[in-house]
Length: 281
Ligand SMILES: O=C(CO)[C@H](O)[C@H](O)COP(=O)(O)O
Image 1 (tube, rainbow, N blue to C red):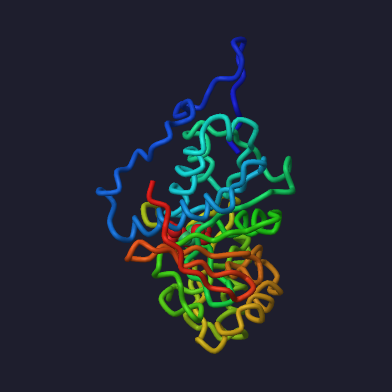
Image 2: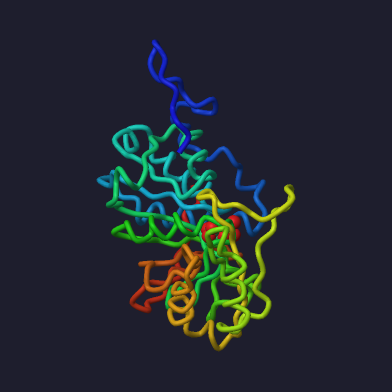
């Protein structure tokens, strides 16, 4: 967390901090692409069903769907949000919380969270998911586990039968930097992931460095292994030097997928699947 600066006049607000935003979405629906619209539908529907008036501690995940989660929470109004605290999963969600005028907290202050809403790279029929495309999966998993209810939000492309169907980059694995070569070797030689690679930064020379100062390895596995995500997750997690694995198994209560036709598919952890007409305003 960035330290807050406190002067004689009291705390100095974050430069992008504003008062709570007005009720209406700042983004006109006509300006959104089909994929963006489906992310928004999923996020809004999930917020309407799971961010309840008496909830006080709310976890905010990472990725491109999460801004719509925050947008919808803000639309619940200043009164609904005034006694709430929002816990981020990384730099992006911290900025979102602060710039929306919501109160920021951290999981070490609030180890019990009423609900955490987060995106996913892919979700299977049992609500196992791949996370970590944005390299935030360590904090994301902590906030998922700390939450009484963990909810996934995504567009229709992420709704699959088996993990690894569309998301081919592999399982994101956060590792301590000095152990990365050893873990890569383990993945290549022991866990049958010959294409596992260190994730490299795009606008910086060298590897991606997570919000926790660690590196990320992306490890693709055969579909047969991905059909048993808990097994492969446990095997990876046992490698010394691994901090966290971007496979979230048996954690989500429900997953909301926005569809191209404007409906939302809701998959529940008891196997129930619903098609709902999405929230439009
Ligand atoms: O796990 C994540 C970051 O670590 C994200 O939630 C995941 O990558 C989905 O992001 P997006 O909605 O942008 O596709």
